[in-house]
Length: 400
Image 1 (cartoon, rainbow, N blue to C red):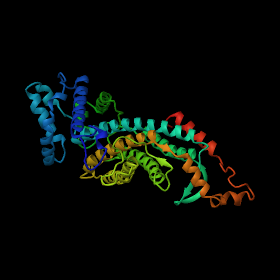
Image 2 (cartoon, helix red, strand yellow):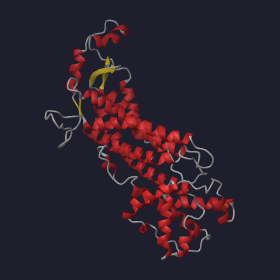
Image 3 (cartoon, helix red, strand yellow):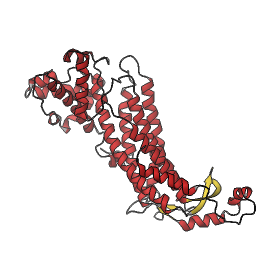
Image 4 (cartoon, helix red, strand yellow):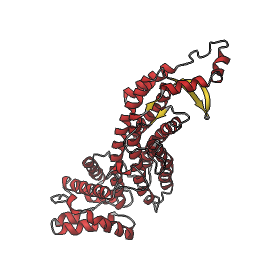
């Protein structure tokens, strides 16, 4: 899967592709069949469903999904047709007790978990690079800027610690999200599973067994309570917010007239179609793009949650699917690009010091007003060392 108009999309690979979504739905159906057999509800040998759907089936499944409003209905038709000649009992028990939303929601949760794992791996790399920058540049003086103007002298290590704080906030929020199974039956009451299992307690055990098969936590049905997916979307956007803030500083710092920060060079990276002299900060540009695109996507997931009605949303649920896929893939891509940007970032300490020198005496105005008569250029670090140490300790401690 790739997207010509979203450069870098290839980094997400097969994540949340049609094939991945179908495979996830098949996994959910297989886990439910396995639970039915393990609880002696269904007398059958559970078949391997994974080989029943081929890549060439995907285009027709996408077309046929329109008639029922979701892709699971034609998938079930295909699976049953191919099971009948091999395992008649499995064909009859397939999907019994479930509803489409159970399978689609759980499949999307599985895909989101895969995205989450990849994003966390990228965050670990970013934390390492930022910790190094913050520690190495404790004494690197530069001009601090507020509202685009020179403010007071700071250390670049403090700026890097600020970047790191945003990444750690994202890391902690991402670590706090959960990926629960969705099984509620037709209207969220577990009526069919309870009837099949012989009571509500056994129905809940059936759900727990299915969740265990998939490595997901069990919880009550959430057909119209969409916090599980809105929290995941919010966590993804907290990541792109943090990365966008870093990219913005790199974009400003890499302007020729500033030249304090330089993206790492690579063959063919940052070129121009018309101006061979240019070396564009392309990673920072693409990361900022993702940071701008993420919040509206998360807002759309929230809008869908707010539109939930009755026992299954009519459109509010449906709008989540492609939105979550897009947000997940773009967050994975931006995370990988941010990790590369930070690993290769070059800091021009000489240019930082020269800019600070040229900004004097105005940039020392606050210091002079607080401590009149202090020598020009006298250090004005405040609690910089303590702040950097605290952020580095938080980074080393792991998610809060």
